[in-house]
Length: 296
Length: 275
Image (cartoon, rainbow over the protein chains, first blue to last red):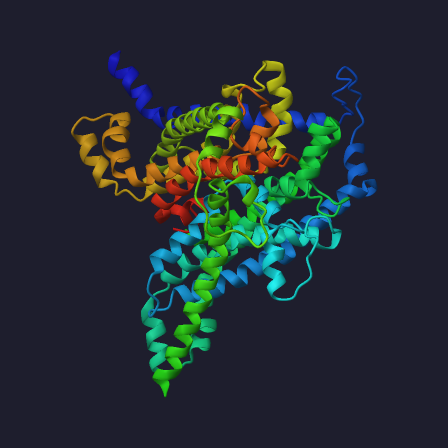
């Protein structure tokens, strides 16, 4: 009997170990998400919680075709992806390449410095930059004064507000790009590089023909992570501009938060969440494909 | 001639790297120096670079602004969500790394894609759910919310570390009559201890730094540090000092922890994709 029980557990040990974690995730993530599909098919205003009329897909169609704020939020989010991510990538590539040179000393110090912006609490980063970007008393405009640049209304001017958000994102996340690309560069084998150099290839040729192709998967992973982060972006923009002035810095996550937890239109908020989920799932699937390919 | 050219570009490399470092460091310096500046000097133009440091703003935020309580909440929530995530995560990771569970590849990819879900998507349904269970503004509620971030991450990271351990190690222990759980606790976890510690540090960082869950699901009783910090944008002069001091208090411990685990930083930030 005792051995039977043992064998029973032994055979199923894999499942028994996995179940608690899966159950917790089903309960905390999957159940709420499935419920939110149901909610998204209804009009549900939390101030009148008992009215729960079924409206089909109209929350989705209203958002996609008639909600101008949603369109602005989507456009701003894509704009940040299109501008900030390439800037972070090229800066990251430049700094990582320089850091990877044989004749550079103090790499450990540079690396430690790069770690810092990534660890600091994002909400602190947001408030700090808001103070530094103060038009009259901020240190940024003071510094620009030396370059004879007139004080800029960073946060209050709709032309600069989105730029301010991107600037902070670039400050915080370029180090991530540097560290990831650097990790890729140091894993590039030396022999082919040296062989090619003896054959007379220039540094530029070595980089384009040998190094770059080898680090492409890592670069793709880093870029996809940044894209997903920007779709999630909330903390910094919430304290820096709160979506303003007007809708100038409205972003998807921020708008979703507002619709749900400020206006309490839960049906609409749930529909918006699912539109965001679809976006993120596309990127995360590409991410996982790349990871799977890398691991063979 | 060649030598000279090389030296110039080396100087160029240093210049760029040092400029970038200064750009990265300056805001961090500004934060910590603002915490020990007199309130009236904070907005001085030109800025005051040399001053006698004061610690009174730390006392102000901890006592008058009740940051001590928020600090305690941050510690409780970070420890709770990390502990539970690592505990459950280790079992699940062990299962996925070593047992022939049907569809284990699919399950592990499904788990990590949960980590990539934008928090707001999970928050809205959790808010409704927690309202019914009276879990809004409780430590347990926020711990559960942070588990949605940390458990998938812990499973995925620990799975990666466990897969790197050679199988021979456990086979010997199994032959000696150790059971499966014993193998996990006595052999595998000690072997991956640095990775385990790094995973735990990451979970703590995310829990500690999280704003959106804390802001949505807590208000006063269980609010962690980011919640009151986000409110220090007010119009009263002393609040600026309160921000610099409170922000420094919130940032410093994580900065130190991240520096101690920098070896695993890239691996953690890319969810194990870049080793």
